[in-house]
Length: 220
Image 1 (tube, rainbow, N blue to C red):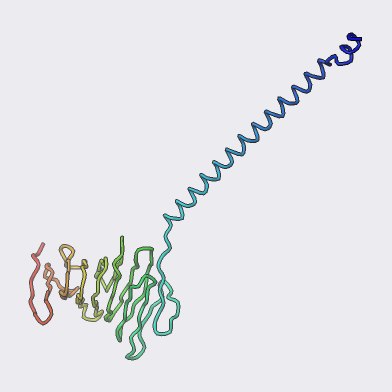
Image 2 (image 1 turned 90 degrees about the horizontal axis):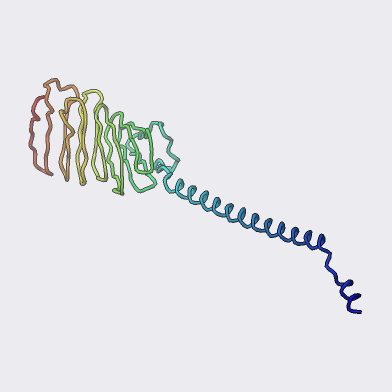
């Protein structure tokens, strides 16, 4: 009787080996699937981190509109007041450029940190909001004004080649023909210069409100 029972429960060794092999293969497939899922997750995290880094490094350029009217400003398009009514360029970060009667200007470029404005002729009042890494450039005739945050009036007469800049606050640097080195202006100073000055030196007038004075920069 015991022999019959033993014969009945006798293990089929080939079958057992096949079952064990199937279980082992199943385990390996699960391990490979888990490894692939982990690698996919890591890859997705890396892609997300790179996209975030690139997004942070790509800042949107400021934009502007033309007042009155509120029309969207266009890069390179000339803007000029009609009649006695002034025109104002209102930039998205708060800076403003008010063109006075007879002025003609255009915005050549905008970036995340400022803009380049070309004043072909006439006068304009400029208010630049100071921010980290502020970079504004105003070109009036052959003169360039570097601005980091200030309020000033700037003008250029194309016929007489006369450049004028009246500060209200802040700091600017002026570069231009006949200037041996950049001229730094602060506070409420005034700067006047003729582009056609052939003296070899930079004639300039600096004055506080209500006070007139002049100085000659040394000839090179």
